[in-house]
Image: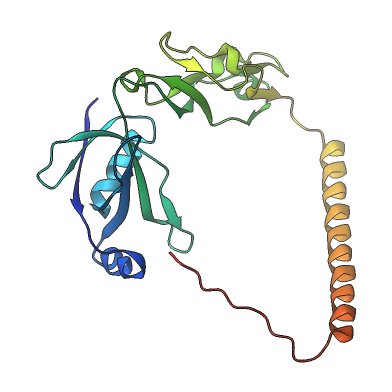
Length: 234
C-alpha cells in the first residue's frame, strides 16, 4: 500500500515551536545518510491518521512544499506525557538501493486453545524484531499465529516466525515472543501477593533509611552552599 504525507519547510526553531503546536502543527526533522537535515512541520490530524495506519516500518512518500517526493520511514514520535499527543517526529530518508536496519512490529493473530478452552493465559514478551533488508522489501508487520499454542508452556520463538526470504532477522532467534501459561492457583496467587507486599515494605524501609542518612549529611554540611541550576532546552 502507498502512503503519502505532505509537509512544509519551517524556519521556526527552539522554544518558538510551541506556536506551531498551538496551530495544530507538529515540528519534525528529515535526516538520512548523505543528506542535510531538513526542519519541517506536519499537519497534526494527517500525521496521526497516517501513523496509525503505516507505523514505523512502512515506506512513506514525503512531499515537502513543491519539492519532489522522497521515501521516508517514520520513527516513533516524541509524546507529551500529559496529553499523550505527539510533539516531535523524526523521519528517516532512505536510499532505495541500500539495505537498512530497522524494526518490524509483531502482530498477534488467531486464538490459542490454551486460553479459550483451558483457562490459561498468554505472556507476550516481544513486540518487534530487528531486521536488515532493502527498503522496498519491508513489510508493515510480522504475524504471530497463536493457534500454534495448544499446550501449557508452549512458546513461539523468533525462529518460529514466518519471515519473507528477502528480510534478514537480526534479533536472537531463541528469544520468546509469546508463551502459554497454566492458570495460577489460589495458593500461588496468595504467595505472589505476599511477596509483592513484602517487597513494597522493604522498599519503603530502604527509602526511610536513605532519607535519614541524607538528613544527617545535610546537618553536617556547610551553610550557604548553592545548587547549580540548569535550563531545559528543547
